[in-house]
Amino acid sequence: MFDGFTLFEIAVKTGRLRVRHGGEGRPVLLLHGHPRTHMTWGRVADLLSTSHTVVCPDLPGFGRSYIPADSPDSRHSSKRSKAAVLVELMERLGHREFDVVGHDRGSLTAFRMAMDHPDKIRRLITVDGLPVLEHLERADWKFARDWYHWFFFAQPEKPERAILADPTAWYSSLSPDLMGAAAYEDLLEVIHNPDAVHGMIEDYRAGIRIDHEHDRADREAGKRVKCPMLCLWSTQDDLERIYGDPVAIWLDWAKDVSGFGIDSGHHVAEENPEALAVAIRAFMAR
Image (cartoon, helix red, strand yellow):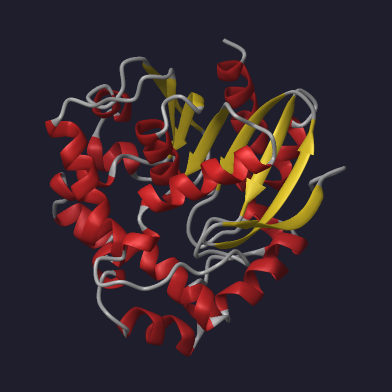
């Protein structure tokens, strides 16, 4: 994975980000979800790098990137804060405009980038994600049953204690056969790091505390994503089953939306990287 890519750390105003960078062509930023690091994108990055410059950071609060400072409203872990940091990253790498792809929690930051920085984002691709406000307003007993961790992670202190008591048991679905040995070893170290675990949980606290307020303010102001948007989802996961057609939901937030499901479980970049790369490349070539 990441054939020909460079791994480095880069300083931004709020801390240091771990980043992989490689390929040639129009730039695309790939943002991972929970509890992954940038390593989840390895196979997809290789497939895209023949036609695009690919940038894969560990999100702030994840992996080996900096841990945002705590605050009562988790504002430093908000998607607005992370979006600004990642725009700064791309500018430091010389990319004034770029496409962005986000999976899971990364899709929330990608969406916020398109909302807050429309002059920077050429195309937006989300994978297994909706705006936080849509998740919360549509929450029912199925959401509470299957996505209970959203509300558990919003509690102070207890989530970190539960996870760190036995990280490999909490994240029991992690598998080197699925992820690849290098990605697995990388993540195994991360989930045993108390600071990194806290950073990941704060990402969820921000969703419950402040991210939905940013979404609501934009909706009330009539603000929408201006760039073309592709909405993808894993057909073996539960996004479509719980919410119905994701494209119909995203049409309330963006002017130009298309989308479809990919035959995969939730971690599609690891489970079906070929289909995901084909979908991303086709959309960016429009």
